Each structure stands twice: as structure tokens, then as C-alpha cells.
Length: 270
Ligand code: FAD
Image 1 (cartoon, rainbow, N blue to C red):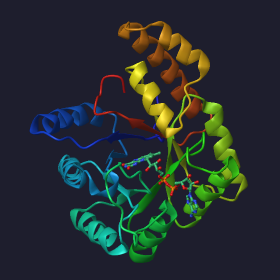
Image 2: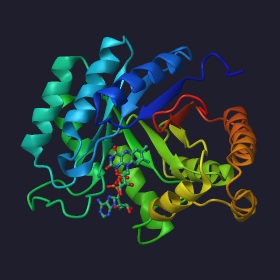
Image 3: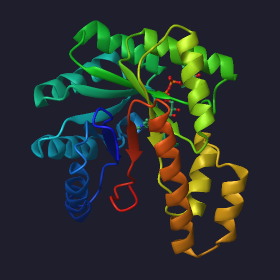
Image 4: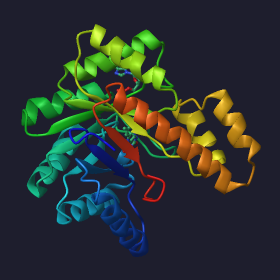
């Protein structure tokens, strides 16, 4: 049972078809029984999913839940960002997940655009004051492009000091990395809530591929055990459910402020 003051939030990605959208609305209805703090929706850097994200955010607001659009800034000019933020403000959005983003290959990036998430946080603070709650990304196992762990921590601190209100982490399966990260950040004078991002495991091969690119580690024992189940998806799900549930319980017990679930647009495992 989750203590009443610990809130949950759930992340979705934009859908491409009317069927996908209808299914996502049902998924959100199932998850809304957990009284979420907000539902967020990802957005492709370079504007690749702008319409889909806008549709999902509109749907979420119509469902009466707080909506948090992800806003990747890389390559966007300040004017383009402000236009989008003004639209969100007019829609009643109060919560933004402010990101650098990763440019998909083949998508061009303007040279005059923003480069790092701290620049986006500064822009939002300067233009909108405290109107938006600004969420940023955190990497307990460090960002894959960072020069060093220290450098990445300092960059995170810079982002927080620019005005972020809280952070959501990249997923991890090693809670010690999370607790160490929180301690290190607090040791640098930053005390914003750092919310663990939780990725349930439905398929080992997909997770392994994705983890390689985003720099999240699947601990050796877990990887080998999941691998040994091969195509036995029932066993993979049962073990993963056990491991991830225990991790969530420990995180909440030992001080995580709340949990943010990467739903992959599915309610079942979450
Ligand atoms: P930053 O904080 O800018 O950091 C990026 C890298 O640059 C790091 O290595 C950092 O150490 C370094 N750095 C930071 N600031 C500076 C600086 N001022 N000078 C020099 N180096 C610096 N991606 C999407 O495209 N769409 C999404 O919707 C999306 N949602 C996400 C949600 C969450 C919760 C998380 C954790 C990630 C999400 N991502 C998303 C992925 C994210 O965009 C990538 O991980 C991206 O590579 C980094 O984004 P960031 O905001 O953390 O970048």
C-alpha cells in the first residue's frame, strides 16, 4: 500500500492512429484509479511528434487530470519554444517536462536553437516565472554522453539551480545508484524532489536494446536470469514483476518522494 502523501505519475507516448488513441484513453482510465499527480506525454525532438503530443495532452486535460507535456528543446529557437509554451498555457497546462531531447537521425537541427536543458529551464523561468512546474531529467547511472560522472552531476545541478522544481530519473534496476545520486546532488546544495522513473519489464530483448542506447544498466544477475527464460514470456513477466515491485517498495520505504511509471501505453504491468 502506498502512503497517501506519495503520489504516482504515468508517462505515455503519442499514438499515430485513431485506434491507438482510443486504446490509450482506456489505458489512462484504468490508471486514473490510482489518483495520479499527472499524466505526461513524450515528444520527439525536432518536432517529430508535435501533433500526437498535443492530441494526447488535450485528451488528458479533457479527462480532468493534470497534463505534463515533454518539451525537448534541442535545435528549437526561443521563439518556437515560447509559441508552444503559450499554447500550453492557454490550454491550462501547468506542468512541463523540460528536456534537451535526442534528435532522430535524418532530422535537421537549427544552428540558432537551444543546446542543453538548462537553457530551456532558464528560458521558462525568465518568461513565465513560477507559472509552470518544471520537471527535468536525472540520470542515476549517468547520461550516456556525459564526459564523466562528476561532470554529469554538475550539469544536473546547473539545471536544478536554473529553476527546475523536481526531476524524474531515467529508469534503473539498481536502487543504490538512485540513493547515491540523491545524496550527491544534496551534497551540492540542491534539494528538489528526485522521482524514480520506473520501467516495468514485458520483454527482455526490447529492454536490452533500449537500455544499451539510453545508458541504463540491467544488473548481470537479472539479465542472465531473464535471458535464460528465452521465449517464456510468462516467466519473464513473473520475475520482472517481482523484482520491480520489490524495488518500488524499497524506494518508497527509503525516501523516494513518489514514483513515475514509463507505461509504454499499457496499464497491465504498471
Ligand atoms: P541535458 O540535461 O541537457 O544533458 C544532456 C547531456 O549534456 C548530458 O551528458 C549532460 O551531462 C550534458 N550537459 C548538460 N548541460 C550541459 C552544459 N550546459 N554544457 C555542457 N554539457 C552539458 N527525449 C525525447 O526526445 N523526448 C522525450 O519526451 C523524452 N522524455 C524523457 C523523459 C525522461 C524522464 C527522461 C529521463 C528522458 C527523456 N528523454 C526524452 C530523453 C532525453 O531527451 C535524452 O536522454 C537526452 O539525451 C538528454 O536530455 P536531458 O534533458 O537530460 O539533457
